[in-house]
Amino acid sequence: MYTPHGLEIALLMMITSAICWGSWANTFKGVKNYRFELFYWDYALGIFLISLILAFTMGSTSTSDPSSFLNNVHAADGSNIVYMLVAGAIFNLANLLLVAGIDMAGLAVAFPVSIGIALVVGVVSSYALQPKGNLGLLAAGVACAVVAVILDGKAYGSLASTGRSVSKKSIVTCVVSGVLMGLWAPFVTHAMTHGNPLGPYSVAVFLTLGALLSCLIWNVYFMKRPLVGEPVSFSGYFSGPASGHVLGLLGGFIWGLGMVFNLVAASFTGVAISYAIGQSAPMVAALWGVLAWREFKGSGSGAKTYLLFMFVFYGLAILLVARANG
Image (cartoon, rainbow, N blue to C red; front, side):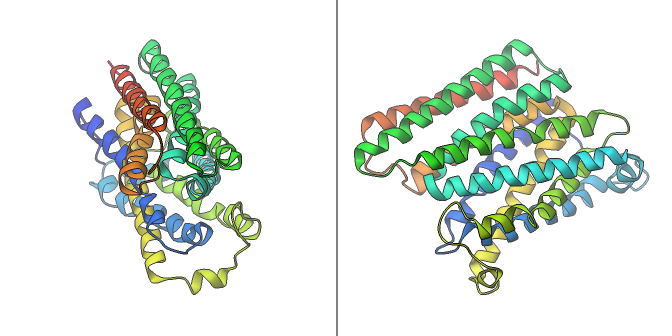
């Protein structure tokens, strides 16, 4: 099983994770006239497939290694596997709400609000279970993330002056998504540190399997009672554009790669630190939203100032959390 042997490699994997987590939603933005509830089936399949592929490659470098994927699964406590299936179901509900928030508010708003809140919830709860790293620096990093979320909310509110609608429903959706998104990290911490633990590749496989299976509950519900638009049926999935299916799988592959890299880095730094740096993805997503998708086109100087300081505070959050490992 491959794991990093130094902070430099672990940090590079965490940064790659943040880039993947902040970029996968572009695949949804790139699909025209295709509902996110339908897109999400391919996305959920993609995150599971890439986790399985990496488990049988990077996670299985030697069959005699007791930490290799299949050996680890065989030796691990069944309760830890159940923990990860539950974590996957929680993550999946949070991510569905995030995609709905992107649909309503755009990348530059939905990601910073949702993932910023998730960073706070996830780091605090993970640290409580695995107190690894400098508490003071972690706390300062979390505080900077909170300020960044507030600044992004202010930037979004300033769009009203441009005549564009500002939906409270979209903000509430992102907030709920963020709280739920932060709750699966403690399950990961437990599964990787208690009893006969799961390794990072095993965690990724069972978390994404839980996410895929829970689509039969969460995604079916949102298809029947969507947050945006009219209800959709499975016939729309089978008659959907080929590009929608391809981009859905690609989005899942990108997110899943980020997940595996984040978990593998966590085996060196601890979940709280790895999770926090991975959750700097909003900076990446906001850059995509502002520069590529022009979501703040025509906004005044106030919105741009808020966005600038949002990037500054997210950058400080990443720096402080990274330094916490020292």
